[in-house]
Length: 415
Image (tube, rainbow, N blue to C red):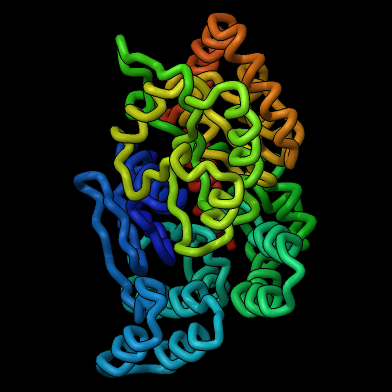
């Protein structure tokens, strides 16, 4: 098969936080490993890529590096040769919006007008106006992990305060753009059947334009550590604290219930929390400040060590387009308890315990059940790792990507 020059676009690709940086690093390496020449074109924060992958930086003002008004003004003032996008970024962020998706799309479109030697362009979820223009000139695929409309709905439902609701409408104002753009995209890849249904319902896209390809995982990076000792009183979860959709509240409330009978029980949270934010206030209200340990900006190796020292992994999300924490925990052979929502049952299959969302009492009972029958659930977890290796390995998934990529290129040439 012809080896291609591929541009992978990413409006932001944080090295540690969230799944976008992880996805960009993994998919670019997987395609490169198959012999393709891959450039990652990213806005800040920039990803940590495998050796041999070329990073092309498209910097904006990077206003979300800080939330200080003074720092943002200084960033804007010090920017030389400002254009309309810089003014749009600054004033949109000033009133509480998130403009990066739109302005990155414009910058990517401009860059690709001047660098038009790519065989195909793949965009990671900006779903911006610039992508419509790029699609006219290149074979093009949009990656949509899940419709962000779900995030918006969960955040609106999390508070009755008018000021908070207004702030959410301002922040998610980019959804108007995404709702207009998504139906015009000819080729979409999404990682789960649940996300496909969401894209069709929320963005009014045709099912025929959407292909489901799971995200992959390197099972050698996420693997059990031989002879490691699991702390029988340690639970672990991955959650963007203060993001209602992640359902961290219910893990915290379950921990409070568990501590009545087992004062040594504690929870590791891979993620961060906002100072004086909802999560910090809830932890203080529950009186479990000493029993919840947050770990932020840590490497995959450190995450693996934490999984290997924990007895049970919890995923209490209210929605997941594709839950990386699910397959990461399974790959590390940790017994998992997860909510029976969206894509999670697709990932867990028969290799974990599924519970109702928003139910700390059921979560507590499930944790006790696993602890009381630990050898049984550990055997299930061992089989779960094999399921991850067989189902979510990058070799299988990259072959599926290649098939869609070549089909997209062929269709474009015929048109």
